[in-house]
Picture 1 (cartoon, one colour):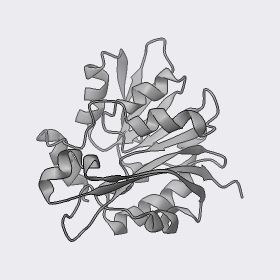
Picture 2: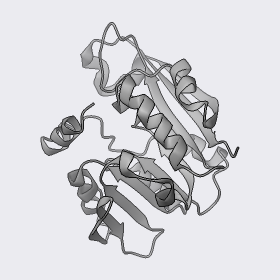
Picture 3: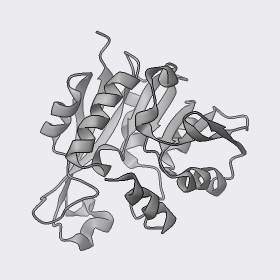
Picture 4: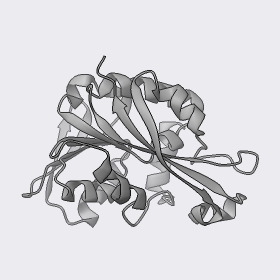
Length: 224
């Protein structure tokens, strides 16, 4: 999707994709992944996700990137987190200034990040990125992710799959085979959970779908 689509979605409060609770798969599976204690977790296309609060409660500093400054500001304001706003070469940055593990959210372009910006990252959490992009942009995203995250980084990827004859994204369907095609070159992948059924539809139930499949992957950046 074009950047203007997501800016407009946030500016016009068309944010049905935002979850108002911690993702159940995150709390279930994160402790089993082997992410190093205290390591910084990178959250691409982070929005104002409450999942970042949960990860912080586990002792992880957070580095997120999100196109919409409105979303980034809302994360700090709605959760009453003391913060400062700075301007950097990457865009506008919001940084926590309380006593907890630091949260640094960049309101800017994911593709402007470089490996040096993520050199302290040891964890990765992607709930929203692949399903937010059409296939052409998804390929660029995956290739850039492989360049960004350091070797040995461990994390979680969530995607959904559905009958595309019944609905077109966003959120886009990403079959497990496509996940492997996109990420196998740079990451070791293991599907650790899968759920099927109409009860997974949530707010997509009124868009013509009858069922949905949810895939949960553990991924680890190859070291060589």
